[in-house]
Image 1 (spheres, rainbow, N blue to C red):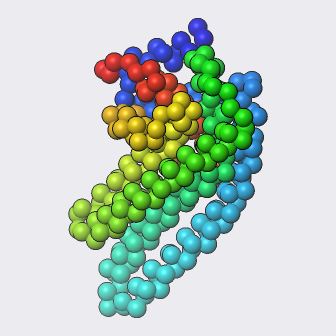
Image 2 (spheres, helix red, strand yellow):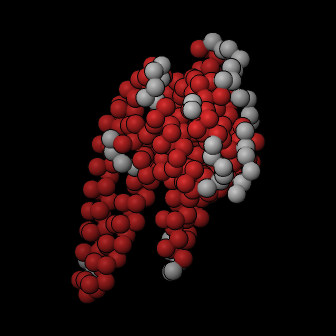
Length: 265
């Protein structure tokens, strides 16, 4: 049984489990012959960005924790409550910093490595389906993928600003503020699924708007797939390798759920 037959044996789409499986299958396919040359340059870029952003993460994490401790240290008459508040605020700040770290890592490296990820997605789609996309020069692929990255960047920044503003307001509403981490993770899963499924979508000339429309109906697969990428993105060292795996997994997501959908069940 070949790889294509194995993937097509999935009887359902739009499940959290499928989202996890796409990443697993993506990791497996990257170990096959002929894939390493598409991964080497992005990995080098990932390592450089990793060193830079991880250094900032360590610095700002320490600074933010110290800020809340110093700010509340003057509340001697409320020492017990101040300690609790400091712990909560420090934890929330640490969570937000980790999310920003994960988003930034993906954003910067994807812009740098976009042409290579586009070629990787094309190679994987050809290997799994036999589809041969129209040939392009490296210069053409570079221009096309970078233009697409700018389209995605504007969407992520514009929508992300509104989401961040809403979460900031929600954080000050008692009881409802416990939803902030959950909503932040769901937003991150949505963004990262769009990011990595877009490579094969762009190769097949599907507009970014149409891709968003189609992925909206795959919210469970999106949660599983994007959520796992987000987790890998905020873990140092792991985030160096998660991106090419996500490109491969996103291509399998595209093949199974968008390009050749089967009946949900």
